[in-house]
Image (cartoon, rainbow, N blue to C red; front, side):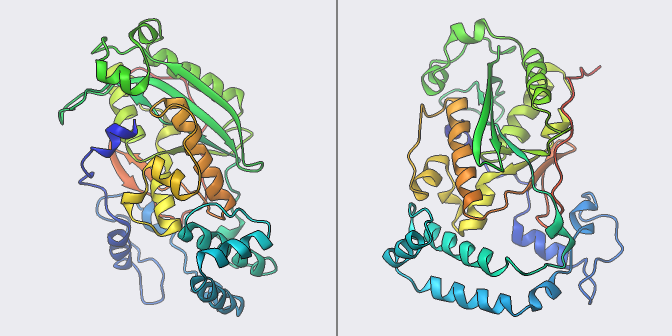
Length: 349
C-alpha cells in the first residue's frame, strides 16, 4: 500500500525526534539524571524513565580513534570507499552515503571489539526474529479523508536476525465486510481480484490463523521478536481501523513496532523524501523483486532492506507504538523488549 501511504497527511500528534529530545531535556537535572516526574506531555513515563546517562561511556580513548576514522571516511571519494570496502570483503553496492556509513560501522565495530561498555543496555539481547508486515487494503484512486480502508491481504515475512535470512512467510487474503466489491483501481494496484476476496476468510478468522502461525514459530515464548513495518500506517491506521470494523480488540503483539523508514533515515542520514520503499532499495543498490503493491512481495523487499541494514551495523529498534488509539514515538534508549506471546482475537462487547 505504498501508493496510499505516500498521499497521507502527517499525523498531527506525532512529535519529531528533535522536538522530543528538547522536551525530554526539560526533565533532566543538572547531573544528567531524570527528574522525578511521572508524566511527559500526558504520555506514559516510559518515555523518560529509561534515559541513561551514557556520557561516561565515551571517555575511553577508543572513541577519539573512531572520530578520527570517521573524519577520514568522510573525505573519501565513492571509488575510494568501494576500494576500501572490497579490501575488507564488504558489500560495495549502494550510493555514497550508504557506502560511507557501512565503512564507518566496520571501523567502529573493529575498534570496539575489546572495549567493555559500562552502559547496561549494551548487555541487552537483540530480537531473535523480526516479523515484517505490509498490509494491502481497499482503496479508491482518490481517497477521501474519511475513507474506510479494510485489510484484504495479511502477509508476514519472518527474518532470522542471527542468520540474516528470510526463514519463512505467511500470507492470507481477507474478505472485506463493508465495501465488499473492490474498486477497479484497487484490483489494478494490488493484483487482488474480486474472486480472491469473495472466497477469503473474514478478518477475525485470518487473525486467528496469524496467531496460530506465530505460536507455531514459538514467537514470544522461546524467541524474542518484534514487528517491523514500512511506515506508521499499517498498524496505526489499517490494523487499528480493521479491528474497529470487525469488533475485535487490537492485538497486543502489534502495539509496538519498528518503523523502518525512520530507522533508515536516521541511520543513513537521509531526508524523509528518500525513505520510500523503492527509493530505499535503489539507494542500497538493489532492485525491487516481484510485483509492486503485492503485500507479500512488498514485505519480502522490506525484509531485504532490513537485512542489509543489519549487515551494515544498524540496530533496528522498536520506535513507534499505539497508545490510547494514538501514534506515539518510542525512545531509542529503552532496552530491547520483545513483543508478547500472540493471543487469539477477543471480540468487543
